[in-house]
Image (cartoon, rainbow, N blue to C red; front, top):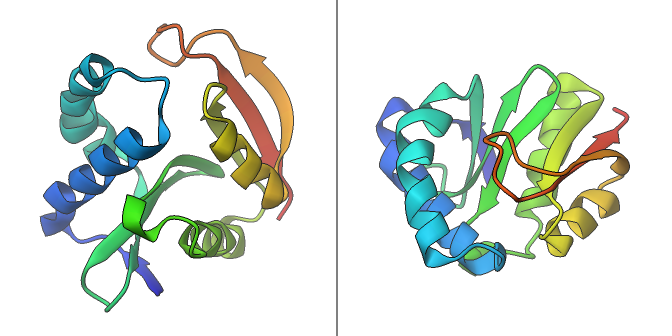
Length: 146
């Protein structure tokens, strides 16, 4: 696996990774929730990310991605068939090398993600009762040193 910057022609592939990853890991979301989020992710969130790093298996084919802004991890998604193979950890280590100390907001209803970030050295520093759009999906705020 290797990490590279995303290319402008990869939006569809990244949306597909997001969609399949969310369906596999965000069990608290209904299919209706996912369909409501899909156009926001495709049309606003992904194109609006300051910096996107892509995890690839062959230098070309994306199997995961991470969005960064300043010292924040704004997105980290791995295709379900590649989960638990070290790719997420590789992306976190890459972010640490280029950004140092990091922060991330994680859905409280996704304990596997909280555990992943904790295993990567993040600690809980706060909580919000709703997500950024005011929906009833509480967020856990986590930080890690560089």
